Length: 292
Length: 301
Image 1 (spheres, rainbow over the protein chains, first blue to last red):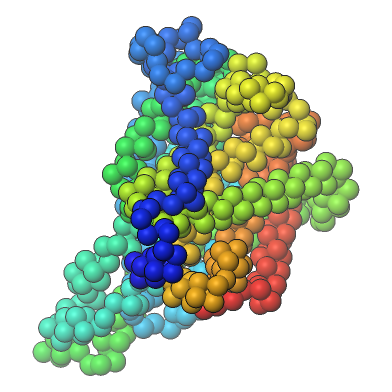
Image 2: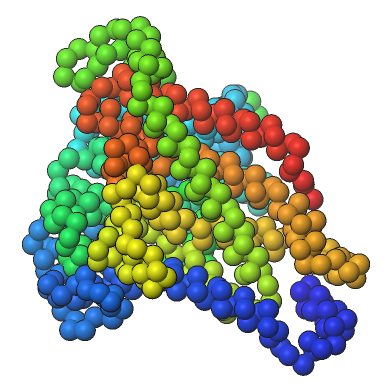
C-alpha cells in the first residue's frame, strides 16, 4: 500500500521523481542517528571501562575504546562477591519460573477457553480483576506470609508467588478461544481425553503465544529487583540485580572499573540474546504492553 | 461394560472435574499469593506490628497517622510530579520519534533504529540506574564533560534538590522511550495509507494530516499507554533508590520508596500497609478517571 502512495506522490510532485532521498528524509535520518548514538554511547562507555585497567578509568575526555585491554576488573569482581552465583541464581529462577508459568498458565487458560464448568466466568473475572492490583501494594503481607511459611531467604519465596500470573492466563486464554474446534471435535470422536486435547492439539497450535509468554516471563524474572531485595538475605542466594547493588556497596561510587565489568557481564548476554531474538522480543513486549 | 460406554452426564461430570484440576494450580496460588495478601493488607493496616512482638490492634490509628504525616504529603507530591514529567516526556518524545521512524526510509535502517532505541528497555532498571550514576558524576562524568562544550557549568545531578528529580526523569526516559516509540509506530502503521493519499489529493499539509488523521486514529494507543504508564510511573522505585536513595532530603523520595522504608527499614508493617492501600486507592481512582474521560477523546476506527 505504501508503494501506491509513493507512486501517487511522485506523479504529483514531479521534481522529487529523480531524487530517491529527498532532503527531509536525510534530515530525519540524521536526527534518528543522533538519538541512536545517545542510546548506544552509555553502553559503549561502560564496556570500555570494564576492559580498562582499574586505575586508568574515569578519565576525561571520556574514552570509547579500551587502550590497554585487560581483564583485571573482571577478576576483581569475582574476588569481591560471588558474582557467578548471582548469574547462576538469576538464570535458575528465570528458567524455572518461565517453565512453571507456561505449565500453570496454559492449563488454566485451556480450562477457561475450552471446557465447561460451573463458575467458569466468575472465576475468570476474579482472576482478571487481580490485574488491577499493583504488585508492590501487597508486598508487606506477602513478606509476612513468606516468613510464616518458613520460605524467607529461599528461592521458593521468589518462585512460588511467580507461578501465578493472571495476565499470562488472560493472554493464553484469548488465544486459545480463537483456535478452530474441528480438530478437537475429531479427536473427541476418536476417544481422546481432555488431557490429550490440551497436550497434543491446543499446545502445539499455540507456539507464538507461548513464546510471547515465555519471553515476557523470562525478561521480567531476569530483571526483577524489588522481590529479591526483600525476600533474600544471603549473598549466595542473591540474584544479579541485587548483586550489582551489593558490589556497588562494597566499592563505593568511585570505582568505575570493577562495577563496569559486572555491568558488562549482566548486559552483554542480554544484548546477544536480544540481537538474535529481537523480532520475537519486540513483538511480545510491544503487543502486550508489558512494563518490566 | 457400563464403565466403558459413559453416559453423556457422566462425561460432562468428568470434564467438569478435569477442568477444576486444570485450574487448580493457578487457583491455589491466586488465593494464597494474591487474594490473601490483598485482604491481609487491610487487616494489617489496623495493627501496630514490628514482626518481633505480637501485633497490637490499634484501630484506625495508622490512618490517622497517614493524614497527619507531614512527609507523606511531600512524598506524594514528588511522586506525582515525577510521574507527570516522566509520562509527558516519554509520550511526546516517543510520538515524535515514531513519526520520524514512520517516514520513508530503507527498511534495514528502520529496523536498526527500532532495535537501538528499544534495547535499554529490556535491560534491568538496576543496571541502567547504576550506569547513570557514573554518567552523572559531577567532576568526572561524561555528561557534564560534554555539557561543558555547550557552556554549561558542572551540574551536581545527584546532590541537588533542583537537579536530582531531572536526573531520574532523564534516566527513566532514556530507558523506556523505545517502548513508547515502538507502540506508537505499531499504531501508526495500522492506519490505512489510503486516508493519507486522500488527504494529499485534497491538499492537506503534513501537519494537518498528523493532526486530523494520525492523532485521532492513535487515540486508543495513547489511552493504553497513558493508563499503563500512570500505573507504572506511580510505582517508580529502582531509579530513585539507586540514583539518589530518595535524596537529597526527600527531594526524590517516591511513594514506593517510602513504603519500603517503613516496611523494611523501620519494620512498621501496619503503617507500611496503610500507605500501600492509599497508593492502591489512588491508582484505581486515576485509572477509572482515565477510562471515564476517554469517552470524550478516544476515537475508534
